[in-house]
Image (cartoon, rainbow, N blue to C red):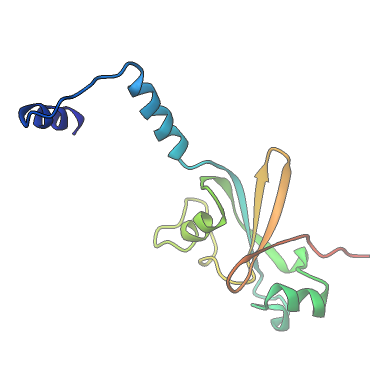
Length: 140
């Protein structure tokens, strides 16, 4: 595309100015647009989890039951994927072709996404229209 464009501009009489280092600048811009990624875990409620805890907005789950209980969830994905944010992961885990190793249903409300970052891991509850950062319910 680039060579043809330059040729077309030259034939049309448009002056072209070549600049040193432009290829490096364009390469860096392309690298910055590439998706980041990392290790991600996805948890889904087990079929035997209490029905009254399923598919609740996180605020209600926290008010009624003290939050999401790790004992009610099973790990359905643990792997490295490319993403820039939680919305990218939602698209990835609801697509027709799910990532290799993904053994659950498509991502939906009440699922939990765990992101492994350099500073540690963070948990996010898939809520009705957003992602709520959370911690697993503590047992005493």
